[in-house]
Image 1 (cartoon, rainbow, N blue to C red):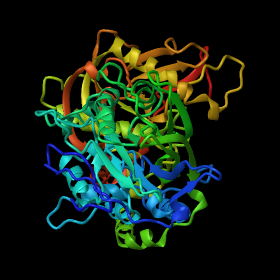
Image 2: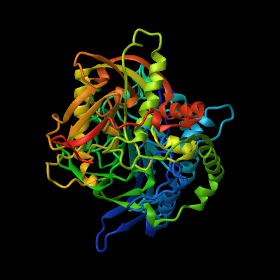
Image 3: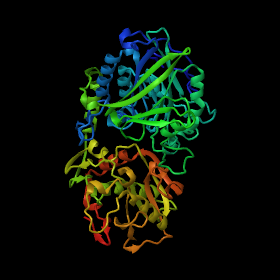
Image 4: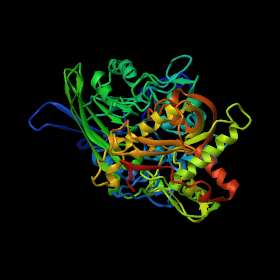
Length: 601
């Protein structure tokens, strides 16, 4: 792997990457490098660690699903081209030698740009291209990046090729070789920052990824890699980094702060463990948080053993924010000590896109825009997802129709062919839409922005009732007579849209006036009350089937079929084969929100 201006410490069991200690970086002007307190002989030094996370393949401020510049209600912008401008501003202000730039994971999945170079013109091909995210991050000058769970979506060969193309290490102290239990990626990276006092500051960055990889990407990692908990591995590595002379320890953790997990007891480790790591593992100064797609400018956690504060920060996904950790150090008793740490985020909508980055990848961008605008069929009517979180809409029915038909055909001739096939789908994007008339790849792909694959699991009628009750927690309890505001009705308990499932093939009502757990009524199959003992096949995405969202029964249910093709590609292939999307074949209102039997809408 080519190395950037600072190399990393660590060894990859899978690749045999060697160990090297970095040399000092070039000195910046003394006035930028450090400061000495007026009237004091104390030696002081300040530096800044910049951080991004959950970039998800965003280089340009562009939405490939709408074929237009990205925009949302808050007028956020996205992409590494914007981040690059902010990074240059910080380096200009602080001095390049007094800054580091790291990332907390989920880099190579999420946009059609990243999909194109994983599947259409893959970086793994003979003489294949360099991944756009590697090109952009190399040009910006990233120092290190933690692995995210979505790094594994396209399989280990694509990830290894991306790793090879990066001028910086991909860190994962808790990504271990399944056989040797040695690190499969460098656990950490260490560098020296030169100060104006002749005493370098040694900074270590420890990378931690998400244990959920073991279930979310089981097909890609089973038998190859294993993923112990963040807290457990941090407790192993932080003392080692301190014993190696690290004055400052920063963790890049692809893990949220809530202490919760979406996969229940499917994995014996916490999914969102960043705050637990700060609280329970002594010796950490700051944590760059990822995975949860939240904006946390600064969050302070007191370590239980030392009483020291650990500063956490999570910049908003897709390059919408850049975190700045500002460190103040003082020299005493022969060593540097962290005197204070503060954190804040900078909004990328305050910056113009860096022409160096947009120019570097303009050809790749044009190729992908042309690809996603290919016409693959027609639709008899327009369909939109804006009301899908609270109404049974044709656009979600369409996803379920394709999934159920695919599973039904796959089970033909098997012992499960006689079982009724149901299907689950979520509203992944409220802006997804299929127009009347010609339909393009980008419009169909916009229905399913994630790289989920399709499975078939067997559930009973009683289990399906439990499943739907769990899903219905998504709605805020709204008594009869109270105003129903669609903007406040959904996402109860901070449940995201992708963790609310509509199930096709059944009819049912959801009474939002009732407490969660007692909301599903008139649950029927083919016009008759559902038999609790009856068996059904559920077409379900691999995220849900593997425990994602912690829905009951499905993760332990019998799997009767699965494939490795992404669901969005299944839908694209279906449109290509049929030529036309005709809502009359699949659209119906099978579920609705009610209050004491009266429809809400």
